[in-house]
Amino acid sequence: MTDHSDSTDATKPDYDKILDDLYLLQKKLSPTGRVNEPIELPEQPSDEDIDSLEIPILTESLDQEIDSEHQARKVFDEAQHHLFDSADGESAIDEAKINAIVNKLMTRMRPKMEQLLREKIRAKVIERFNREN
Image (tube, rainbow, N blue to C red; front, side, top):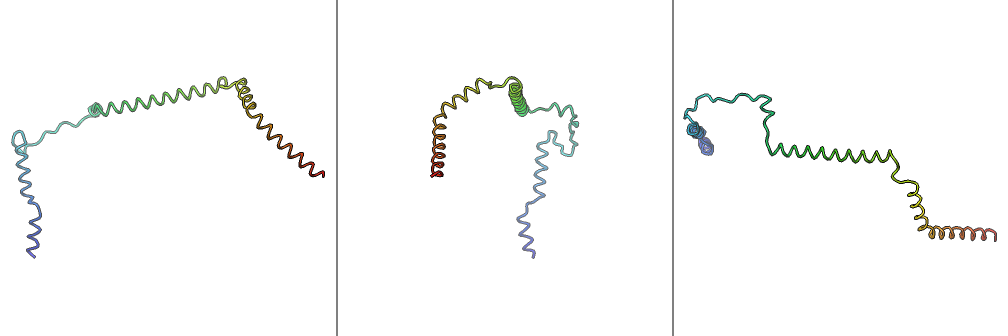
């Protein structure tokens, strides 16, 4: 039983030695060499001090993001304003433009429509002749 406890003690670190090493390191690093001397902490920061803290890189990137967001909103608002203003005012397409487009479509589609109409009429005529005979 004692062999088992000896083996676990061998694997555990020596905490007393580690604490002694840390105490010695603290002595070496302290400016006066005194360890138990009370440490003076700075005053608690006020809200004004916290507000004045700025990290330049973060502040710049945050400002850029805010500016780009405002710019995007401004462009969107202008586009929306332009869209609805032109809808309220005169129509973008007047009657002359509409008639011109319809006329072009009719001239392109007329041969095909005439052919379809001719085939329909022919089929009706054939059907009627078949009924009469």
